[in-house]
Image (tube, rainbow, N blue to C red):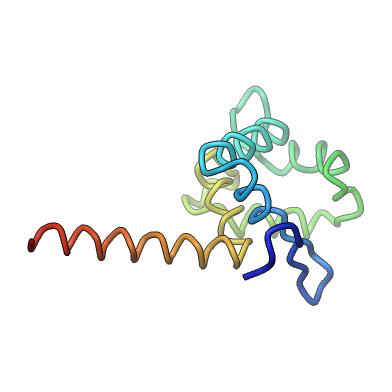
Length: 123
């Protein structure tokens, strides 16, 4: 794991801020911030992030130089129900999936929870 105040950086130069945010905000605070991010990007009339709303708001996130194909790829990556848009749950799941360190911590917590549940069930 990365030291608490150090931001993980991939070979591509991407800096993964989610583990730092999770450490500072806690679980509920992180989910709240993800929901705020979703609200920033979503189409207000449709309540989802679609290509048009992502393209319109990408510059505010420093993603203004992404091509249309790259933006569509981002949507496809998280679009589990195949409707061409991201609802709030799909967006939050995608953000977690894109953070390897946070995913590893989530797996650990899940396994620990299962271990405790089985231990308590058979005690």
